[in-house]
Length: 94
Image (cartoon, rainbow, N blue to C red; front, side):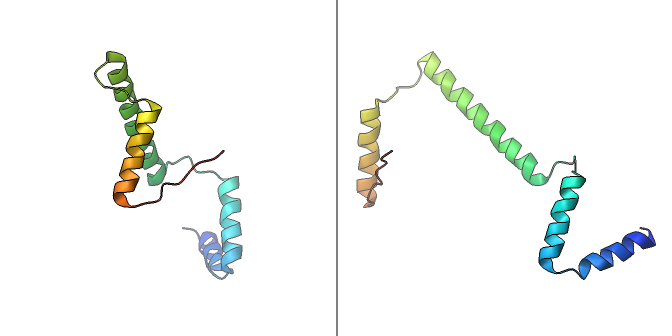
């Protein structure tokens, strides 16, 4: 690195943490990185896995290989699980 870059890095190290954070945000906004972070790549992989799971479940429904539950049966089963665990089931009221 050039002497100028080293001098700038040294000056940045002397900033208060809130000033350094503000500088970082400004630089990221002004010079966006086109490199994908590991977090973004992992999020994309997880999303792809969920998409595949959803596609597989839709196919099972369309093929008739799964038995669907009514809303009432689903509620009954959920209530039974909460009761078995001794947990007060939260009630959603829009």
